[in-house]
Structures are given as C-alpha cells and as structure tokens.
Image 1 (cartoon, rainbow, N blue to C red):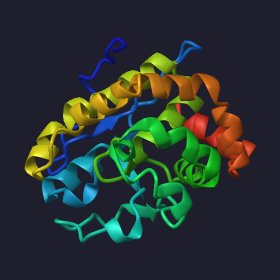
Image 2 (image 1 turned 135 degrees about the vertical axis):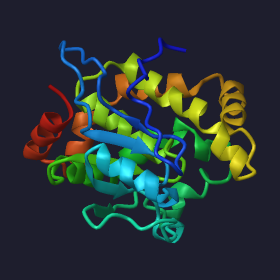
Image 3 (image 1 turned 90 degrees about the vertical axis):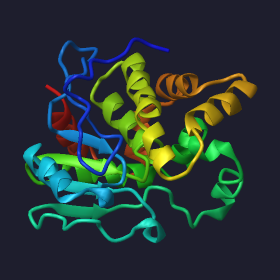
Length: 244
C-alpha cells in the first residue's frame, strides 16, 4: 500500500454514483500538479438522479466519455442535461474473442492483470479515448465504465502517467476504488470484489499495486498509445488539458 493521496476535494458525491473523483491536485514529478476539474473518473453515470446531474454540471463537466460496450448501456434514470456531449467509445474490443475468452472466465477479468496485454494488443482503443479527452470542448471531461475501476482505471493510469504523475500516486488513486465500491456491490447483491481479487492475485504472488507499478515502469506507455494512433498534437493537447 502506498501513501494515500489527499482526497478531501477529489472525492465527489454525485447522487446515484458511488465511485467518482476528480483527477486534479495530484503532484507531478516535474513539480507541477494535475488540473482540478479537467478529468473526472466515475462509475456509470446512467444511475445519476436529477441532483446528480446538477452536480455534474456544477463541477464544470461538459463532455462524458462512455467506455461501456454497446450491450451494457441502459437508459438513464434521470434526464441527462442537453448541454452535455456524450461520446461512446467502448474500450474492451469485446469482439476479439481470442483475447477475451480466457480473461472473462475468472476473477482476472476484474483486475489489472489484463491491462498490459490489452494495451499491447489493442492500443488504438485506449488511444481513441485519450484523443477524445484531449480534443473535448472546453470544460471538464468525465469518463466511466460500470464500476469505475477497471476500464476507467486503465484510462486513468494512462492519463496520469502521460501527465507526469509518479507511479506511486497512480497506484494510490487506483486503490481508492476498492474503498468506494463496497456500497455499490452491496446494493447490487454482489460480493466484495476487492477481497476476492486480492486473494486471487495473492495466490499468483502479485497484487493490483504490483501489476500497475510494473505496467508503468516496464511498458513505454507513450510509445504504446502513439502506436495506437495518438498523434504528437493529441498528446500535447492532452497534457495541456491535464496538468500545469
């Protein structure tokens, strides 16, 4: 476990969601910090109430990037504000059954164990999401999957790494989700996935922290997303949006 990141302002209470936080205020290794209000990671926003959507708008978010597969999308509980632009960019590439069938067969599906293989096999999927965030209209960008941990976690790792955040801080942000999600699992009748996943990884002599740390330290993430189609201009725009 690495040192906790300050969370007084980062944790956001958007009614209907459980795992929302601003990616601002995180120090970069260059001595700056990530921008408040630029990017927000979240669990599925379709659950938001009217009050929840009002909080989204009050936070300055004007673009939503939905990482869910087409078959996972359901109707919003409350009316989504017309001022929001929503971009659907399924991250998984679930049609690649050769890749996914071994992964969805067990707890590995809910861990960072597949992040690196996914990035290496389908870098264009992540690059497309990063480009959408970089080129979004003025205002904040909220991106989400269902629980806001794994697909959202993979994109967050990339965003923070490309913004110059340390590996320890990236790991610390990931670990917050396991603290925020138990009420969601309880509400949906699911077991505590954090405990299941930790045991699964421990049996393989690793952990989520170790996997993310290895990903950040041993894979050239910038080169990977560049290979996936993220242009130098896209990368510059992304960094300008995320950090100062």
